[in-house]
Length: 157
Image (tube, rainbow, N blue to C red; front, side, top):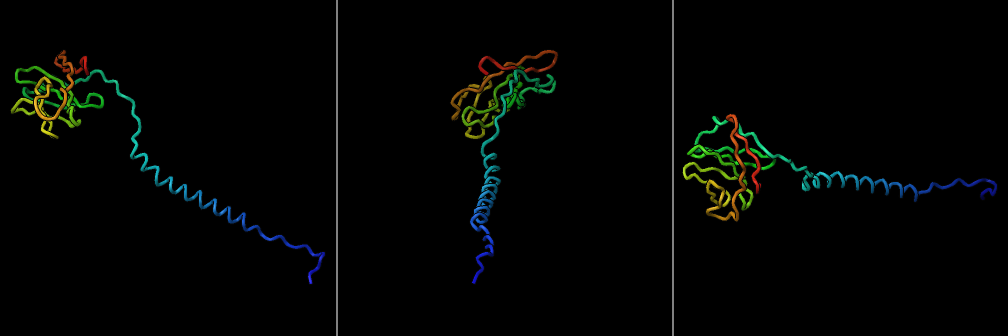
């Protein structure tokens, strides 16, 4: 028989241990899922970048451009194609096709601006003359000062 004066030892509380382990495993699982999902989310959603307020571009010296050639340069975040025509005049146009934003190229043999994506053609004024481009290329102003070529935004740029 048991002695009534003898104190009974308390039984360990198994439910509190079990809930502690459940909570610990849940936190670990959510942490692991977060560590897997966060990089994918950051890859799919690009960070916001402030808009660059570029108003002009130094395109180089006059002697660097031969006649009937072109050069593509960055104007802020967008490419600009700078053309030197056969008569020596300069043109600067947006180098992004108005159809699907492909980068355009200058074709010396036909003296046209060509988009290779869907065979769109522009004249040297930037007007779309064939293919799917819906509107002309944006024009930039070209200023030559002290043998330097300066490109600035036009009224519609």
